[in-house]
Length: 269
Image 1 (spheres, rainbow, N blue to C red):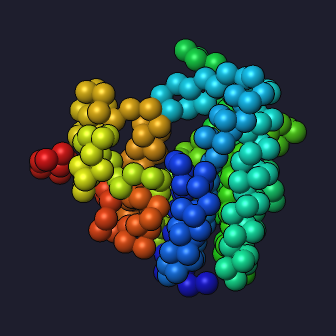
Image 2 (image 1 turned 135 degrees about the vertical axis):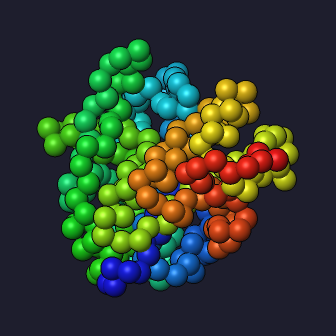
């Protein structure tokens, strides 16, 4: 693989994975994109629904899931099991040689249990090490990795890692070897000024504008970790960071929100 050839790291989330027609439409456009690709996913809504059916309460703080040991079991079943293998099966049906993975497989992504500070997140992992050569091996051998949001600490423990964080950390690691484009896809068209108006997409968003919108409560819940990780990647030198609708993945550069590292005049107008 030519080291000058970009790698697209695409995170799919939101309600798209809960609706097979939407998933199928996304994957059809996804596989048509040029360059090597890595698909990263969570599965939070299905995990929440399964928890409710089992009588377990889901606790979230700023879009991040509190993960006790029973919740970790459910997250692993949903993320590394049903959701991951369903995506791989769909891609195989489309003629794509996909490989479903967690961070524990091939020791691809190591993490450490988040220390308890103001909040005890439980079995939540913060990425500590990514093995670039192993990722490169997969990409250079024509494999499309499909990575779920489960990592490990190399001490026998699985950890739940936010999928937006995982995408950002992987992008920041691989940018040492390849040009990287990081794209977050979900059901909305991008970052919105009005959550009830899908036409209110902010075409470019810088860190200062983000903080103002967060303070005003316009940006909240699951969009917070998504944007914090997008800005982290941008600060690490990844120039192409986008947030768009899954249905517009084939137009990601023009249809959604581009993340910019510095102030853009009137960026929220």
